[in-house]
Image (cartoon, rainbow, N blue to C red; front, top):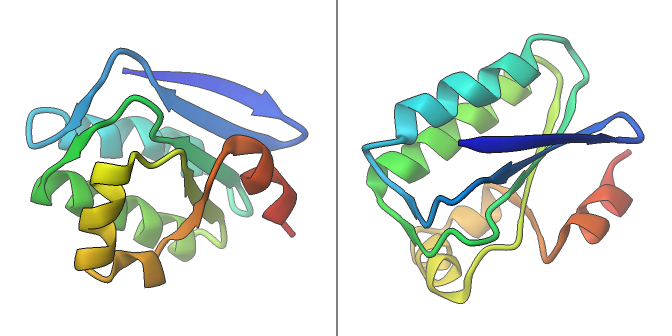
Length: 112
């Protein structure tokens, strides 16, 4: 479901042929991303390029990943959110919760 790339110590996960982040894949997403958060101080980017729809279980999975990252002293950022999904993010006030960047390069520049 996710393609992995590592760049300068930053883990980048990109969806592979996934256009909907919904109840059908939310649990698998949490489990797959958790593998990358087993070590403290992980720098992780989730690239949502190609994802055009996120339901409540999808947002729940993203919040769970964020909580897992914070509990592990890791950093979690999201990039390439489609305009449709970004509308929902803002409606739910999650743009104040997640660290969101326009693209991968901007995300990489914001890590400490």
